[in-house]
Length: 160
Image 1 (tube, rainbow, N blue to C red):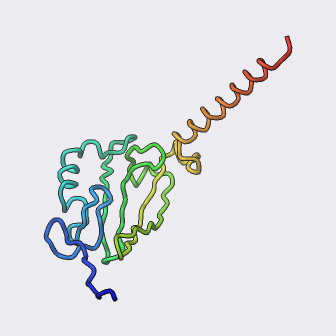
Image 2 (image 1 turned 90 degrees about the horizontal axis):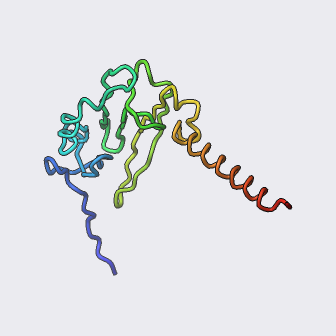
């Protein structure tokens, strides 16, 4: 017969109290106070060192990635980058489409609910269903490759 052993809950990497989630960037277990990216290492150092990179690629307005927790099982993540091309975009003027979704992540016996914001810039928004502009280019290359292969096969099989 199995003994009823308590299930170990990971502790926060910053302060040692019970963790509530894992950071999606560095994957470290963190408490409510240290879950924001600017409150734990190495993410805080990365945000400070790469601050110039976190700007809108169109207007250079700040587009700093954010994450926070409202409860011990609901966490909010807003990377402030286009889900299609990956470039950082501002919220006010250059986010054409903003989609909020919930992702469930299992962590041992617990599960966490991450509310993730996905943004699309004006260029990637029309192609959001196929992965933005990079997805459209992949589809175009694939279709062109099939067309060229079909034409070559037709020319090869054509009687001379």
